[in-house]
Every structure is written in C-alpha cells, then in structure tokens.
Image 1 (cartoon, rainbow, N blue to C red):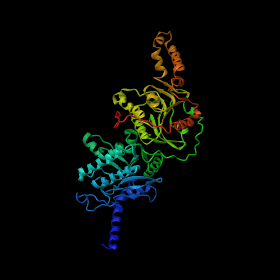
Image 2: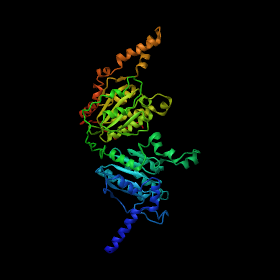
Image 3: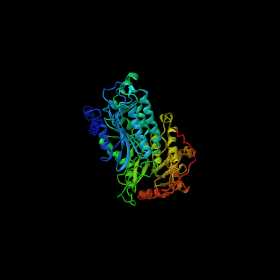
Image 4: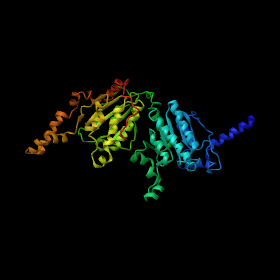
Length: 516
C-alpha cells in the first residue's frame, strides 16, 4: 500500500470512527437534551487533553446480524485526559451506536480504561448511556460486565470512581455504578432500574413511568442509589470538576490543599444564634457548617436522602475534610436505618482516601419505632460504629448540643476512636435526656409526692444541673475541651493540626466483616 493510499484509508477510518452512529442519531440525542459521547468528553475534560485508547476496535455487529455496518469503537469511547490539570481515565458510552449496548469489545474497552486508571493511580469516570447488554452476544456480554464489576471492586478504596448516568442504565448494567463511589444523575435524562416499567406491568400489574421508577429524583431522594442530581449535563460536569479538586488521585496521596482567603483565625461569634436555647427546638446544621468551615466550600453528598444526617466535603484552612453531622431539623437528628448506611459509606470513603473526619453532634439517639426495629436498625446502626472504629484518619467530634445513648458512641466516643472531642457549653453527654432519666432514677420520689408533676419538674432540673452538662464528661476525660462558640473554627483547625501526622497500627487481617 502506497503512502497516498494509506493516508486515504486513515482518513476514511478516522471519519467512520468520529461519525459513530451518524448525524441523524446524534440529532436525536440533542433533541432529548443529551450530548453525544465525544461531546461529553470534550465538555468534561480540559481542552485538547483527551488521548483515546483502542479507537478502532470493532465488535461483532455483522456476525450477529445487528447491522450491515461496522462501527469502530463498538459503541463506547475510552481513554485518558485531564481535569483541572490532573489526569483521569474515563469511558463514555455512545447511544448512537446500537443503543450503546454492551458487547464483547465494548466491555473490553471499558475494562482496559479501568485497568489503566488503576495502574496509574488516577480517578476513573464512566459515563453511562446504554440500553444494556447486547442480547445477541449473549454470554460474551455477561462476561464483559463481570470483568467491569471485578475491576470496580479491585479499584474500590484505591482510586476514586465516578458513575455519570446520562441516559438509560438498566438490568445488570446498574451494578457497576452501584459499586463505584459516587453516582451522578440529570433530571429527565437519567434512568436506572433492574427491570423497566413494561416488565413490571407484565409481571406485577403495577404501572409506573420511567422517571417515577428510576429517575434522578427517585434515586436521590428515595432509594439512595444516586448521590447528586442536576438540571443539565453541563451543571453535572461543572460539579464533577469541582468535586475532583477536593480529592486525592489515589489512596497513597493526600488530598490537594487549596489557596484560601478565609482566615484560619476567623471567629464565629454568631454560632449561638443558630443553636436555639430551647433544647428541643430544631435548626439546620448546615448553618453551623457555613459559619465554621471555609466560606462556600461545602459540597454536600446525598442531600435529598436520609436528611437527618448531613455528610459532605468541605475545606478547613484550604484542607479537605469530611463532615458527618446530625441535622436536628429532621427527626431531631436521630440516627435511623438509612442515615446509618449513608454515614457509614461516606466515612469509609473518607478513610480510604486520607480525608479527616469531623463529626458535628446533636443527636437524641437511634430513631425508635417498630418499622425501624423490624427493618434492622441494630444491623444498620452498627455500620456507623464499625466505620468509625475502623477509620484510621484523624477524627474530631464537636458536640453542639445533645449526645445521648448509643448515638453518643457513634458520634463522639473516644473509646470508639475519636482522637479529639470538643464541646460547646450547651453540650449534653448522657445515656438519655433529663426527662427520661429523671422518670427512671427518681420514680419512687415522684410517684410518692403530693404533686407528682411538680416533683418531676424539680427532679428533671436537679438531674440537668448535676449531670446534663459537658463538665461531667470532661471530668472523666471524655471531652478534651469546652470552647467558647466564637472559637469553633479556630479549634477545629487546631484539632486537625494536632493529628495531621497520625499513624495507627491495626491487627493483620484479610478484611473485616462489616454488618452489611
């Protein structure tokens, strides 16, 4: 083959690769508010940073009678590029080619990109837009999914893994995102489910729309499968770029330090304006976070699910921290089944990637109720205990108001592994609240009094004065420092600096057995 002929063939192959399923199918994507696979990569990565892998690989479309045309790339685009100047690896499924279905070579491309990320210690991002397994390729497709799942598991805790759902993601395909660290969805565009509405109707007779069954709102607020949702793909990509700037590339690195204009010695004089004097009155813990941490730095995770606990990443003096906080605005901040799962998974991510954990505590206990007990609150609640005890990163607890019973242990107990515990003067650390405790301890005195109601109030105040204050726990050494609220930010920064070189040795083992 002469030079001219070779160059002509190169241009023809290049054109076929770039056109993918063709202009008509790409236009159909645009009409649905969706971008094409390559357009998404261009929108997400730094300009001109993308390097493609296996660009000309071809699947078995002709062999299985799927299409008369061969498609270089087999319905997915993979490679490496940069986000904010830092390397990532990624795959982007192309719905214009055979509906983005996953066949043998399609899966091979994705798996190779995963393995490239793991070898180089960089984050892996997968953009999902696929009709699912390529049925005609049968077990070849299933084997491809298995390889991808295995790579997800091997990468877990080693490199950050993001799943960006920008179209359908159905059947077995949903399990790869479920194994990854964070799932992103877009309203009206993203759908995830094991079986779709038609199958459900045929089997159970239930009728439901695609959005109601597996849309972004459903998975962010009801199932907890997804962590973030957005109005557009562009908003989603902007957030991903920001989130990645908080995280290390892998588990051997520390999170990046950002330049910060918010002074580390800034006081927080209005903190007590957020916490009501009435101990049962709710408030939003996000108002504490916005005052104590670097300005506008909080990135909340799972905002719409299990809202009685707030988790997310923030900056303290430019350093990334993970926040694990009770939110008295919902269920009085009690821990329940879903919030236990939410908190434990977030804590384990932080620990895997060297991100210190700050617990903001205002919790009356685990949520009571028959549904909670029968749903396994014991098993689920134990996940937080396990995650905190397992974590070796610096762990700081700030008791804002209540810290009672088993939830005291989960949120602020030194014996469980918190390195430093500080408290506001409003803090209460006890087995239970004053009313319940007084009714048990002083039962005979109350019932035998001429006016039981008056005696009960007297004993409640007596118990509060003697035991319901932070100085009792501090006297036993369970609280390190009781602070003026205006020094909250300063004390959190100082507490992390104290433990910035923390090292812990643990018993040798293959892995633990968290109560899943």
